[in-house]
Image (cartoon, rainbow, N blue to C red; front, side, top):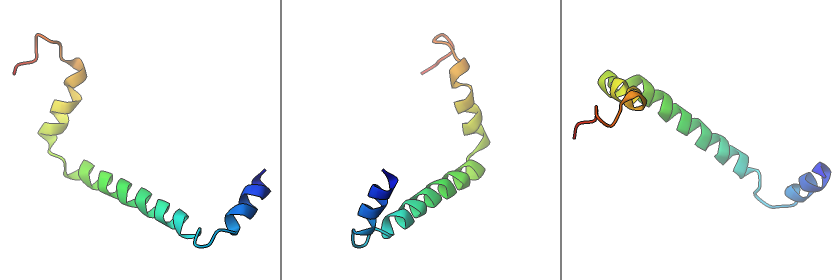
Length: 61
């Protein structure tokens, strides 16, 4: 099965660009996520982390 897929993929012109694009998207996404984690405000992180612990009576609009 793998030989069939590999042989078919090798016959497509320009197919080698797709793994590079996928790796680039993956890297950019996780680099941006890493950057956001280290630059996020501590107050925002505390507020978001307490959301599962809040009850309807605790929520004030």
